Length: 275
Image 1 (tube, helix red, strand yellow):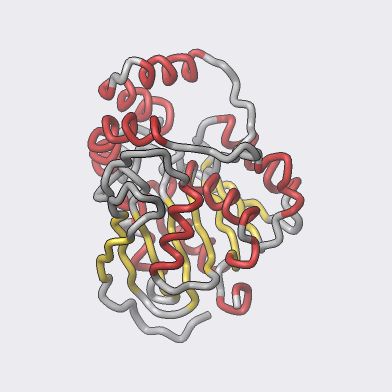
Image 2 (cartoon, helix red, strand yellow):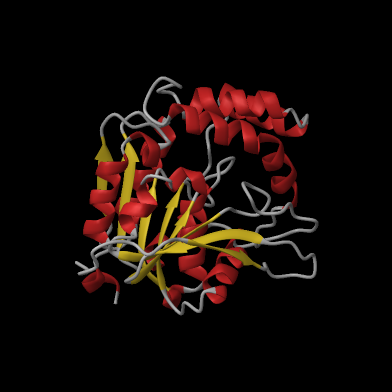
């Protein structure tokens, strides 16, 4: 474990993503030690890590950023890749290698990046992660999501996000911030997802055996059942992966049970593991 006694004051940065379309990614860096990059999920922003990031920064150099078009990052004007944006973040901070901690879509991006750039990933923390190539069941929720996106109905999309993924409700811990993030980003999400481009080989699920980074898979016991199924697949197929199920947490685990998540991540991301 690092001998740091406390985090440095976080500093905000503007990261220029690749491509001729311009724009910027909002990023924040604080702490000292081995580098860790935090990636949030779809329809969220880096406020997801408000409680966890300062605690991790007591032991690590912590970077969190808002994905393209979400939070304080600017909207895309042309097709973009979350994987290439992550590479731009690492390059901006001069990081040859870092640990990646991603929730949901952020976990999916982390896995895709680890397959595309294995030498740049020191460790993976996958929290309620999705994985590219996974066939999601066509249940009524998925049909409703597709309809809300197609009709560009931000209010319907936000209501679905909160009912399906924040099932513990507004009264549970972190509920007010979760609701604010989801509502703030619903319309931005519709715009940014329309420009999101995937490579032809966007199928990490078929290549999990090629992951070389030490991997910890975490999910909440009250998350969507399909996230639990994906977690089992990740643990089974990624060499050496370990799994942890956290009680009393839905998909927004970093805001529901931040202390337990921080404890698990610090144990996994200790410097001797990610040098």
